[in-house]
Length: 431
Image (cartoon, rainbow, N blue to C red; front, side):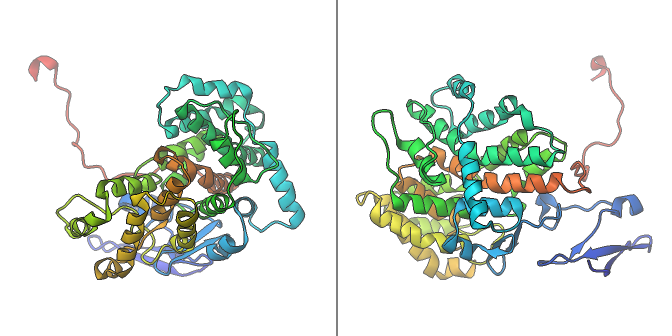
């Protein structure tokens, strides 16, 4: 830890305070302002937390300028090439890559927990037939604490671990059941001789009349998407999980809160917005007109799936998934669907047009994931649900890290108050 300090001077009073500067293993130096208010009575103002390190974490590192994403120090490019989602989930939870035996044991453990309590399956019947799958998922995941309350002591490391395993294992089962409820088909039970992703695809698309054999191309693409979505530092949903967890709430409630945050169109709903945009453009003949609209600041139309809040370079996840996206479109997509030709043409323009290149508005992971999901036959209402399955690994890893931190305190942001100053109550007859 660095012993450097940052001096903050009050120009009105002439007083100053030295604030310690903290250096992590990578990334920007951080000014520790935790004692600022107590010492000076001053608060900092940072809407959207653009310049605020809300916690200390050893899980994921991002350098948006250089297009770097690492899980526990491992470049996501290496993991995408050599690993799979469950191995990455283990890495996020435990901090290191597993041995061959540890990975086998972990896969078996996750398989052991894939079923949900039979009473919980009836919970789905309480939702309207056309309820959005995310609304169902929020309710069902939040209710898990009522079924699995045997291991809810958050101060017991073993209980935390069991909850982590249960959440990672049961999310695909719950997600598939959300879909089945929407389409009026019976829930399909998990089959643990399949891979994590293959099992999910079967629960989505099999019926009691016809079984489903996962296509290797589909399984490869979905495994890669889950891996790339597994964690992304202190994004809105992860920060929500941490803030909810800081109060001591049980992990199922915390993950349900994260799902709610993920549901927002500016976060997990971005890939669904990509498909809506493609529907609006309609045909490649209309691209030039919509490119002009996208460049016009006075026009409300925006190209969805381009650029990123953090990455000011090419999203490294998008680079990885691009080739798989093309493979899926070539081998699995309906060749007569003009939407896929439209998507490829938009991608080509964005990678060459000086307007987009200069502003670094490259296709991001949401652009490709939405196209892949649709090519796999997954409806757009399920896109954010898919995201939630993957991100659960990161959410629960951050929750475990936070709870095990001896310095952890309940989150309590402050505000810049701009309301009325003190005023006296006026009786209703005098107003």
